[in-house]
Figure 1: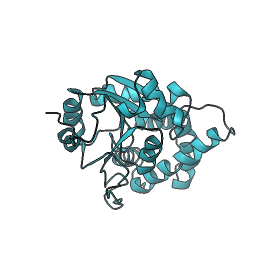
Figure 2: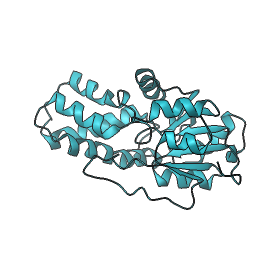
Figure 3: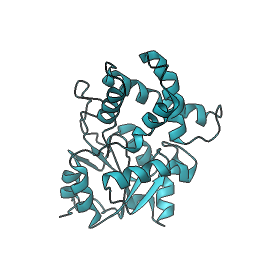
Amino acid sequence: MSPHITPPQVLAFDVFGTVVDWHSGIAAEVQALRAGVDGDAFALAWRAGYQPAMRRVMSGELGWTLIDDLHRLILDELLPRFGLGDMAEAERRHLNRVWHRLDPWPDVAAGLQRLKTRHTLCTLSNGNLGLLTNMAKRAGLPWDCILSAEVFRAYKPDPVTYLGVARVFDLNPSQVMLVAAHQDDLAAACACGLQTAYIERPAEFGLNNHKDVSPHPANTLHARDFLALADQLGCR
């Protein structure tokens, strides 16, 4: 690690896209439920409804709502567009919980174990506590602490979320590093005084929709994956 960078005490991780591959998981599960559905398009459409749904809460149109419940609102609006309006309630409930069953990227398990040797690891996700706990249990994610928008009753990029991590651990914001695959998330954390690490996930939106993963000068670190981040932070 560069001698000009103060090692963070806590690494706070964005989850969807950074830790787990939401696109592949959703595409596979919807296709397993109904053959012939375009899983790629369905996954992208479900994820596209995420920000507009959160804005309904942030604007006051909806009261505080867990991400599980927002995912269900989006799903119910989405199904008729894909010819799935007749899906039974049991199938809808099962499909909505796909977000609990997402698989991590291949580097995640080993990378987190290495990072854990020198840093406290926590989530900082808009996902609710039950969702994040079920995901961690299933996937073997070794978090020291699970923090969520639910804890702070505010979604990222509200400063309350980023500063809340520092308050939970009684640290200065500069002693916390947000690890994420989304530059807007990192920019909001940086504005609150956190260190930031960008993780390249070029296939987050599917193999046919590679995203730009170019380095951004405002970030503290830029890494190919969690193993590369562990190298940069001196975690063996």
